[in-house]
Amino acid sequence: MFERVLVQNRALARVSSSLVARAMMSSSSSAKSSAGGANEAAGKVNESSTMAMEFKQQHPRQLRRLPRVDAGPSAAEQAVSNILYNTPIAPKLQTERHILDCLAQDEPGVLSRVTGIMAARGFNIDTLVASKTEVPGLSRMTLVLKGPAIVMEQAKKQLEDLVPIWAVLDYSHTRIIERESLLVKVSIVAPEDVPEGDQPLSNSAFLGSHDRLQALRQYADLFKGQILDVAQNTAVVSLNAKSDRIDAFLKLVRPFGILEAVRSGIMAMPRSGNVTMFESEQSTPQASIDHDSAPDLSNLPPS
Image (cartoon, rainbow, N blue to C red; front, side, top):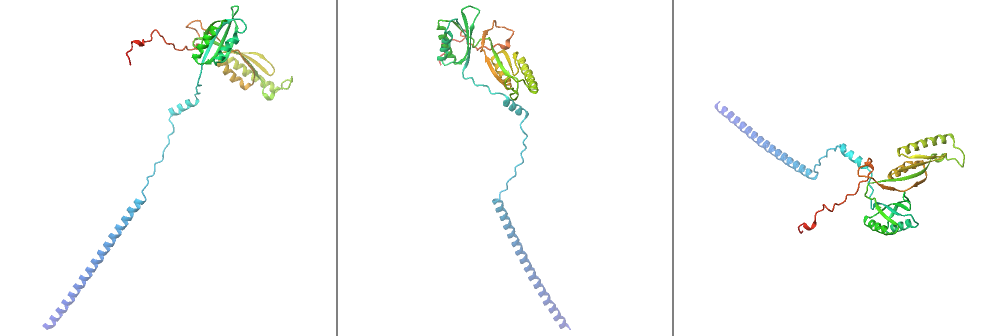
């Protein structure tokens, strides 16, 4: 009986030892497999991160620009640009304008000698007015020309050396009154309504000529002119004003159709005193140097 129990205990021990051995073998194999999977996963992670860095280096990220909002020019900038665009460009005056008044004897050949001296000096005479005065045997010539001031002084001296010339007055930088007369003949009929010969105007052409005559009269009143003659197709306007106002009037009536125009030239006369009631028409005199109040250069220290 005792032997049987001993044999059973030995058999149980063998079975338990074999089970323990198998359990240890299975645990070691599972540990190895888990370690291999971990190593493989680590390798995959390292490989994917390396590829991501290479991709970023090869394809750098570009930041998108924000949309620009154009607010437009400011009100001050717009106003300045409008003023600059609408302001006319000042003309470049290459030569100076001179007004000379010559008092000469009333005899033949004086006018030709005066103009000959100016032509020899290279002056372009804009206007020339010659007429008799209130003194018998004395005539007056008013010349408006352009040229340099130095050459003008030489021309004045040559004019004064002429025997028939009594005096040469320079009104270039003096307060003067200057006027010019204009006679202009303007058409008051549209070009398509002009009749042939002495035929009368049609009703529509007559009404159109009446409207054009009224507009021409309004222009003449604005410039203080007069309508001296009115015919079936034309009207003659007289105007006495400054040269720039005459130029402006001619530009206004040019659309009517200017048939003839005659200008007398500038007539000038100095004002009577320093203070007048027409200060707006006075020309600003050129600033002169007072040599009495100028410093004496000999008293200055050497440079």
